[in-house]
Image (cartoon, helix red, strand yellow):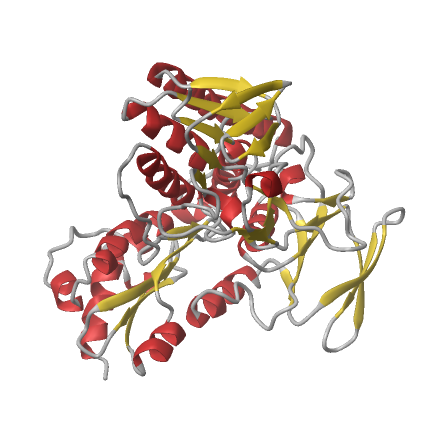
Length: 447
């Protein structure tokens, strides 16, 4: 009998399978599509490959600012797409090799739960002491805007495109929406962004949202407090209701990016697993309502982040093997990969004030940073949120390499460091991390 069966081969699933194997367990991983999950095949990896190409194109177009004459630049999207697919294939192969080396048995097929200790795949029933559900998520759909893979696209469809549309209307100003709007615009497309709320990234710190809107607004038409009223797929006409009036746009494609929803495996009821539309219910040990069954990653509806799924997978695996591991979400960093990037960890200013009644804030601008000026990345800021005794509880960065810079901030939040500890730490000059140091210095001076 297997010590664990893992359903799903994304970051949560393959991390769980690897950990069970590392602990000496016999483990079977079932994947109905490609190993690597959404992150490797439809999300993190292909989108970052595309964004890298967009950033190079943008630099080349503006190379004369650096004193480099490059002539006219253009995007060969066929080559861009081929590069994207090579990177995805390489990443997927890496997952396959790691699992093979660890001795994880992999079976292709759609898994069905027959009970809390039995799974069926390809007509074969397999028993296990434990089951880990890691089936991921899929793009949410809007009535009347169902993707067809041609004119109306989901985020999954975008990473399959072999041709670049000349004009795109993006529905949704959340993480996925702003990333793709930024990507399309930097690749030379005409972009319209439609968001129902009164600001982009409504869950982010308000200063970051404001800065992002200012930056994206230079090349993208942004409609806030707006929604799509109708779409004519034949003519490519989209009517958008805005606070002022109804605007009509003719575009080559519509991208629907309003979040993702959990993908549940068949047979949850047979295994006695409780769930709702938000996801499978789990506790801090990633246990579901069924004894011996765990769930990790997007299917739980908690944090739809690859690195969180991987951490949850390790927790579930260790508990399968008799340990007492717990998952903590107190310090989860994440990046939003629009151009420029956003990095965030901990509380927003509003959350800190709501929790503590007050907050001290320090900000530092990229425009005042030596390295940012040298590399031509002057847009953006770093914001540090502290308690009244200067404990760092949140850091928010928008600007070049923000997703990398947030790592130091995550350590500061996790260790509940005082802003003075960062301020008194010598940072190399000239470097972008000096922005974090300066923001901490300014937080110490705030009242």
